[in-house]
Amino acid sequence: MKNIDRVIITGGELTLEKLASVSRRGARVELTDDPKVWERFENSCAYINQIIELGEPVYGVTTGFGGMANINIPLSEAKALQNNLIRATKVGAGRLLPKSDVRAAMLMRVNSHLKGVSGIRRDLVQRLVTFLNEDVTPHVRELGSIGASGDLVPLSYITGAVIGMDRSYTVDFKGETIDSITALRRLGMERLELLPKEGLAMINGTSMMTGIAANALWDGFRLLALSLGVHALFIQGLQGADQPFHPFIHQLKPHQGQIRAARQMMWLLEDSKLCRHGLDNKRDDRRNQPIQDRYSLRCLPQYLGPIIDGFQTIARQVEVEANSANDNPLFDSEQRVSYHSGNFLGQYIGISMDQFRYYLGLLVKHLDTQIALLVAPEFSNGLPPSLVGNPQRKINMGLKILQICGNSIVPLIAHLGNPHVNLFQTHAEQFNQNINSLGFSSANLAREAVRLSHQYMAIALIFGVQAVDLRTFVDQQHYDARKSLAPATIPLYEAVHVVTNCARVHNRPFIKNDDEQSLDEYVDLLAADIAQDGLVTQAVRSLSEELILAI
Image 1: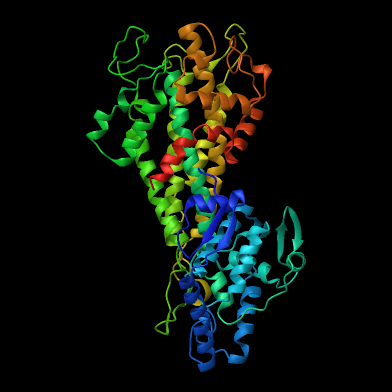
Image 2: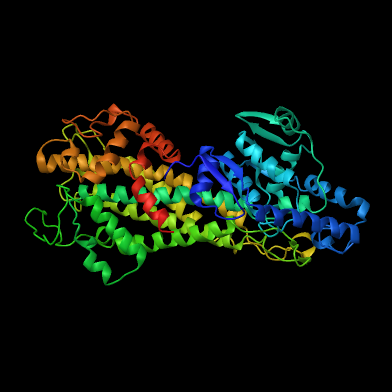
């Protein structure tokens, strides 16, 4: 990913890349200076004022909310209605959401409002931008939204904080927890009272679930790219063939994801001395193994292709949602029309995150199948059982128990891949919200699936590096796999050594004896590096960038 240090918000044009730059890397946010954008924005505010002056019935402005929309609100209480909405909606439960997810939601809320159909003041939008640029992040609870009327509860915490409603709204202020009123004072801001429609506009939308989804998907693309790199290590460790990735095959079944997977694997295995190349089907050195590789190797493009295509479909849906106006009502100030609608329903996010979690389950299942080949002498083509690095020490168990640890994680990720959005038919608040998306909770589950996948990928990397070291010894009687690996996989191999603080030694494999390291510490270090987009993911960055650019 190119280094983005500034993101200009226009009401559109947000991408996963821009969202990640702001939410995770602190890129500066600026509001567009396009006069057309601000003309629409100001006209929307003026239209609200006209509605109030004329006393026209508009949902959430001159009426109550939801099932109470039959209650007429006196004009004298129109402002109090909005401020009470924020207070009444502060009912979240559970832990705090990650800071990056809240920042992504704030950025999307700004983007949504700049479409000029929501009827709020520039001051509110500017406050969100200031909070982002000054590294001030409201605390938001992880439970409380069914994704029907958007993310009312989570977004109310953001709104209460930026206006300084009271001291119960707290923030992360450059790493320090303080109350919102103190935060505003430090920022040189006054507390703010919401005007008609503003409370509803701030919280009635899908920005929170979409922010979580965008960050999870950003991680997902890196996991997908990393899995290709790990597969390349596994194939070299197993003395597999690159023939199944030949373009001739995939031109005859031209799914785009399948073609991309095959092309990447051909590049990753190019010039490897450990795998079999081209049309070489000789069995002389295959120790009675079949003439063709088993399905988890040979069918890799056909298996990963739908996952690649699925990720890209999900990414397009998330980016559309991130660039949408998703509150209610929406105002066409030019025609002087109020539209009562349902853009706040997060069904696209809910279903896409269900699919995303399912794809993550398929991703780790595939790797786990290949690990099973690596550790079994019957299938590994000459590698020691459980990839023991020093068979002369008879008590060594190698990676036997690490495989079991990996086995324990795969079912958890697979379980999280079960459908979620169809589980609970709600009849919330007087049967008004009588369908729901569960998009917020589906996205939260996606974050958990990503976290578990980081752990599993760390384990898979240990197997991959150990396997190519042992394969190098079988073939060439030394353990420096860099002399035999495909050049494209050497950076990943070296990154694992650097992250685990394990010096590369030519006369021993990555893991030699059981008592010389703590494998759980290796897993921790690698998983943390993956989560932070560190050395390991940088080693496959060109893969992830190509996958993202293909959206």
